[in-house]
Image (cartoon, rainbow, N blue to C red):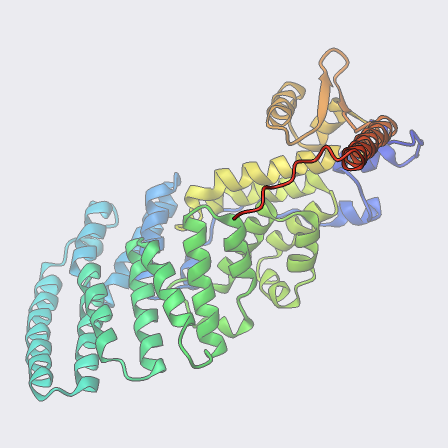
Length: 445
């Protein structure tokens, strides 16, 4: 691998091994790399509340290869559902457990029947109250009646009916606070249903309220918008929304997202979509987001390693995180694409400063085979993301830097030709005017 000035350096091998280094080798070697430990389900579930806690546990049980983790997740989901009123979800979890956790985690028909009876009674009471409010035409009472219906349907897993009830409160909202409450309720149910087009719509509606929003509410709206963009694979927009989330969020949105998720989602989306300048200004130097990153040191370190061109360390962090990220309900479908984009950016940035790159050393830095690296580089060259050519025999990548000398001569020649053409045009026009060869418009009568 040769720099443009072909200068030699006794530390070059260490530098190239990580794609550049600004720390001492002793510091790099002493930095701990996280191990790919099994996800601590109890600690993970403790970050969330409500329906999302249950759905995340069930998602882990459905996507984990470890039978012990599956059973632990299902056991915790069973216990959590028993605290609520969702008999439909309870039956689903019991079916998945299939008697593998013993008699204490079998179907509890007595509990289900009791909950269903209470639900019928509660529904009748709510209908009676709402009809009374409609008769009296009290807008605030009607709004609260529909809101109670939304809470009731949501608690029992009828998310579609819950969404309709929350949206119906819109016609009876009299203050900005009421509109924001309606939007937040609609957003929560839409996220649980996976209807992210509704999420975007109601985030925009809440942001358009005339009164200024409280910081905690604004943080929730940005989280919801970030999840919506993430689902749509608009990673740059998602990163911007997560980076704007304020510290006021705290644990107030645990029924949707944890602060650790803000750091992970925002950090990975930024790595995949931001250029170096944006990464520095909007992520690394962002004091507000830095506080979120402190909650997930692995993401913080891999971002710093990527910016510092320590690609071997960065990719090691990513590799260790991958299994746990694949168990995340929102990130699962995007891990492969995000990782590919991050790796491609690392390959591009690695080759950028050099005239030629030894592919053997580059393969070591990226923990891959030479043949595998060659295929990756071929794809990037074909896609016009790297301006280079590959010497397959000697395993060297040669950059195609523009010939500045030749380009300057070409611009000078083009400018000269344009000047010559303009001068000839002016002389021709002057001679035509001189000899009165120009046509005069006939005067209209």
